Each structure stands twice: as structure tokens, then as C-alpha cells.
Image (cartoon, rainbow over all chains, first blue to last red; front, side, top):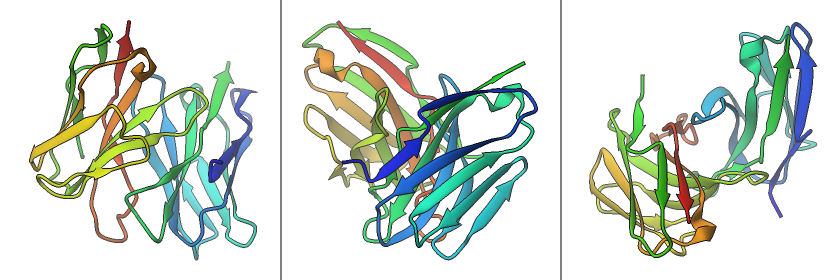
Length: 113
Length: 115
């Protein structure tokens, strides 16, 4: 069973609207949790990083939150743009082995004009 | 900026062929990784290397081997390609020291089709 589950699998939103992506994980203990953005046909790029002691981190219109008690993270996209169309991947680094990261399957976001 | 370059974006090979996927990074990173990415699945680790000539198996090493003769270069080898190895292959590099642990810098990917 995957240790990182993301929902929804995909979503479509209108340009200018907000959306929230969810990540539930069972990796414990962990060093950090990252959100990556992967454009179609490209490699993933890191958006945010949070250590286990952080609750929120922003990067422009992207805001990630972390609740270590419930083992949940979310990524909120504000005022979406067409360029936000991509797959968003939640990745958890286990404290026991920082070479073997746990990846979610990703949420595909499509922003329509 | 870190640049990770994968030699081939698209490859089409026949079953049984030997396949080489090359990856070069220009930021002197100690760690390098090979993942495969399939629809509906998270990235899965094939092999990684934390130093020249060092290699460790990931979660799905069967049917693959790797080579790291120089710090900047990490090669993935499919000794005898099979159709179930049709996938997107992603190379990544990273620094080993906190707080950088876990931040991967990815290449553009190599989409391999085995017929």
C-alpha cells in the first residue's frame, strides 16, 4: 500500500478560481514533506518544503499546510492561471532513510480559460 | 541553477535490445537517482548512488543495472528490454546534507517505448 495518498486524482477549474489538493501520508517519522509541480513532458520541480515542525509555507500563489498529528498536508492554489495546469506531487522524506522517498501518485490540475 | 540533462527524450526499442539511458548533472551533487513514472503510480526508485562507483538498489531494480564512473554521470542500463519496461524514466540529483535532504532536481525525462 502506498504510504502517500493524494486526492483528488484530477480536477478542472476555471482561471482565477482557487483550489485545494490533499495529501495523506503514513510515513513516520519523517524529515520533511515537499510538493512538486510537474508540467506535461517535464521533470518535477520543487514548490514548497515543510519540516515536521512547520505548519504552513507559501511560494507565491501556492500555500502548503501540514498537520503532523493527522498526517495530512494540503496545497492551495490561489487565483489560478493557465500555467498552473500541471501534475502536483506530494513527497515525504522518511527520517530513517532520506534516499528512499515516498511519492504520491499526483493530482492533475487543468485550468480552463 | 542546477541542470540535470538526460541524453534522450524519446526512445523506441525492440524487445531484447540493450538500452542505455544517460544522465549528467552540473552541480557537483553527491546523490543521483533513477526513477520510473507510470500513470496512476507514484515515482518508483530503481537505483540510486551516493558516491562515484557506489550504487544501491531501490524498490524495483529487477531488469536494470546502473553505472557511475564519474560524479556527474549516472547511467541506467536495461540489459534486455521488455515491453513491461515501457515507461517514463526520470533521473534526479540531490545534496546529502540537511536541510537539503529530499530535494530532488530532476531531468526532463526519457520516454522509452519497447515494442
